[in-house]
Amino acid sequence: MSTDSTDSTSNLGGTSRVGGDARPSPAPQGPGAPSAHQSAGADPRRRLVAVRSEVGKAVVGQDAAVTGLVIAMLAGGHVLLEGVPGVAKTLLVRCLATALDVETKRIQFTPDLMPGDVTGSLIYDSRSAQFSFRAGPVFTNLLLADEINRTPPKTQSALLEAMEERQVSIDGEPRALPDPFMVIATQNPVEYEGTYPLPEAQLDRFLLKLVLPLPERAQEIEVLSRHASGFDPRNLLSVGLQAVASAEDLALARTQVSTVGATPEVLAYAVDLVRATRSMPSVALGVSPRGATALLAASRAWAWLAGRSFVTPDDIKALALPTLRHRIQLRAEAEMEGVTPQSVVESVLRTVPVPR
Image (cartoon, rainbow, N blue to C red; front, side, top):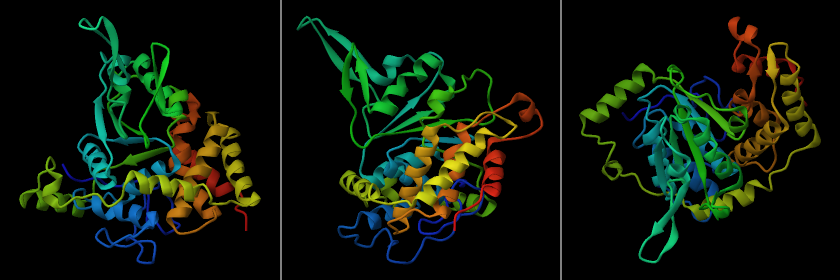
């Protein structure tokens, strides 16, 4: 199925909320947003903005989710995708990898999956009488960890070192992962039988959590129209999907993102938002300091995509929901009353004063 609705982002150059339920607005037409076919020259911003249009050739209604993934790559983080089966999560990652000209691999997490199936293992070679390392699927650029909550904590934890340190240790020897490297993990929001909820330590290592609802009626009609016209999701070349950016563009973009500044007032606003989650009566565990640094990193990437060299309070507000909601643990009685992490973040955004 070649569709996906979006909860994750709005336009690249605007200031509307990232991670909310608003529909994505049209791509900006200013100097920061050429078409996918327009020459981007040496400007990595133009190339990365063009990724969204390129993915749109194969995936319907996915602009906002692509933007969220690009933000995570610019910030050097990982993404947790939550959505029901059939909303094109796998197709999205394949299209993104093609548009960025990077390698991607997929792991289907199951209850019997072992850590070595993810990271790789040492294999004994009888001819040389020595052990040789056979790399696992984690040695790639974009790793799709499908249904990550269906495997036991032992295997889930195998990703922790890879996500945080960009390396894996086999028999005590660290082995560096390719650069860029990003984990895009998925989980089903409706089926909890036989699942293993991700521990807080692992949830905290995801930069963003993007919720992908079912598509709107018009989008679903567009999906069927494309399939009726012969669209094959297994053959991306048939729709003209091609690389419009590269790993080199991404590395240059990350260097530029690192120069994006933030005033003391904006930094204080981000800290106040995070600290406010800890004092909410419905919250058992609020956002950690790591969440504050993640919010700043995502906001800097968002500001850079918008063509600015500084972070504004609107950038912080736009990224607050997808950056913070998965880092909040509610009290049991609050959950029974219908409180959600999203409502906690939205309440904090309404009550914490915005710097002028």
